[in-house]
Every structure is written in C-alpha cells, then in structure tokens.
Image (cartoon, rainbow, N blue to C red; front, side, top):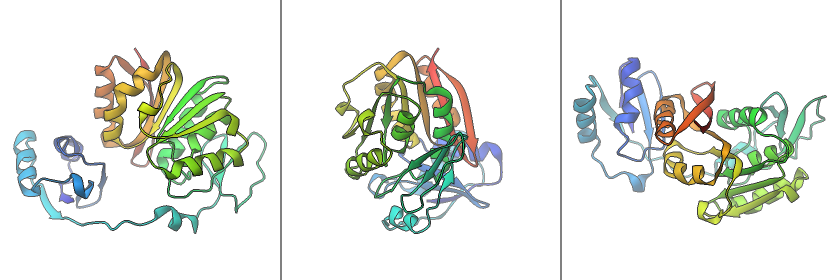
Length: 277
C-alpha cells in the first residue's frame, strides 16, 4: 500500500507506528511517501479509514492513499542465483556460492552458501549487519540459537567463530535440507542442529547468544520466548529491521528489562545487540 507522506521527519517516523494495529511487515520510503507491505490475507482494513484515524490520533497532515498493488509470488532465490557472486560481508567473512570458488585472503574466512527457497545469501544488508555483530559477540564454546535460520548462514558463521552447540530453527521446510547441505559444505555439520518448526521445537535454554534476522512483527511476537531461552548473561542479536523500527524495538526491550549494547546501520537497515540490564 503506497501512502503519500510529506518529506517531514516526524511524519515519516510516526506513520509506521500509527499503523501498528495492522500486521505490516515492512516499510520502504521513496520521494512520494512510504510503501507499506502486508500479507494479503492479513489485510482487513479500509485504507482511507485507517489513514483518517492515524491522521487524527497522531496529528499527521497531508497523508493520502496513492495505490494498492498485489505482488505476485516469485521464486526470488532462483532469480538471485543467476547474479550471486562472492561478497565481503564483514571484516572476516566472505560469502560465495559453490559455483564461484574463492581462495581466502589471510585473515578471511569463506562461507559457501547455495540458496534454495530460503533467505540468507549475504546480499542483503541485514545479513551483513548480523555477521558484523556476530564477530563482536560470539566467543568459542558458546551455545547459539539462530531463529529463522533460512540457508543456515548465521548458524554456520557462529560455528566458524567457535560456537560448539548451534541450533538453527525455521518454519520454512526448505531450510532443513538447505541448512544441512550448507553446513556440510562448510564442514561444520557436527556443530549445527537444524530444526523445522516454531520455537516450541527448541526446549533447550541458557543460550549464550540468540540470533534473529527476521521481520519486526515476528521479533516482537517472539521476544519473550527468546529472552526466556537466553542465559542470564546472554546476548540477543536482532536484525531484519528498518531504521524506523528502532524506537519500537528499543522500547520493547526496555519494557523487558534489557538494554541495547550497540546498533549498526547500513542504508535503511539496522541490527542491534541487547542484553539484560
């Protein structure tokens, strides 16, 4: 749903919050306003009425509905595969598909990822941001949980950083086969357990680091469960977030007695590390 919003910092920051009663999964700005993305089955509102209510409640002026477009399903990973090349994602890690072998430079580590219908190729800002945070916070012998593991890229990176017990979980059935294949390609299969399902399929507790590169609404939905699974001195690394999501996530963390340790940003995307206060 494309909404016209004036180039006013307050209006553009507050509109996503004003739409919080509806399960929008992403917001992207352009010159005219904001594109608001939501699953078709989750949209039950009448956009003009929603905008009138938001304008009155938050004192927003000059916002208006431009267009609503249904986006056809596409196999994005299949399209990405045609263009994927090796990419430096952090100080340490290079990610490459198996059809583009790379000889690592001194001090570099290569992760080989062949994606299927799963997210995590290193080409998205959030993956790169998470890898950079992982370099800061993951230590050898730690226990790590990767929520929404996708291709297994973050779980594999955690194992390569020395984590000895890594669980990757995802509701996408493709992730089981793809995650295991990628773990085997990188010789870290013994350190990684890939599971399909919700967090209920992970009864383990006391994780030293929990990774979640997923959308804002899912992070908010799973936040209590993730914190319950985290060790008292553990660290939560979050991404899949736009810069406009920052205040919402920080507020949710503060309500649960957590503090933000650091925030990284690339373009419009952010990643943050948090721990109990």
